[in-house]
Length: 208
Image 1: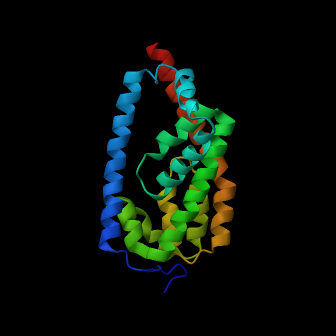
Image 2 (image 1 turned 180 degrees about the vertical axis):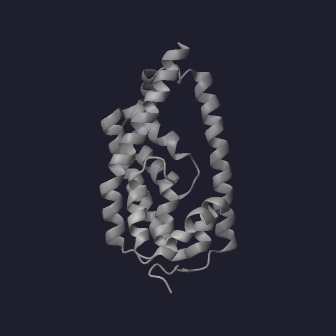
C-alpha cells in the first residue's frame, strides 16, 4: 500500500459521462467556428483590433472571461492556450494574466475536488488513455508525487489541468494543493503567455 493510494471516489453516472464527452466535442467545434468567424471579421489582423472588439463587452467582459478560464480548466471544452493568450491580448500582460490566474486557480481547485469526489473514472473521462497511463505511475511513488506535482506546476508546458485532477486521487491535503498552485502558477502562466505572445506577434509582423 503506497502513501498515495488511489482514491476511488463516487461512481460517475453514464449520463454525466456522456454530457462531459459531448461538451468536449462541442467545445472543439465551437473553437474552430470562432477562429474562422474571427478571421473573417479581421480580428486577427492586429492585437489592437482584437482587443477593441472584445472590450465591447464592457464590465461583463472580465467575469465572463474568468468563467471561461474556470470552465476550460475543469472540462476541456476550449483549449487553455487559446483563452490564456486571449486574456493578455485583450487586457494586457498584467491585467490579462491576473484574470487568467484567478480563473485557472479556481478551476484547478474545482478539478482537484471533483477528482477526489469521483475518483479515477472522472479523471479518465477528462484525458486520453495515453496521457493517463503516462503519469498514473507517479501515484506509486508516495511523497515523491508531491515534489513532482510542484515541479510540474512550475513547468510551462506540463499538462497541469490533468495533474491537478491526478493530485485529487492522492492523499494530498487541500491546503498543500492550494499552496502549491498559488505559489507556482504565476511563474508558469507568465512564462507561457509571454512566450506564446512573442511567437504570435512575430507571425503577425511577418505576414503584414
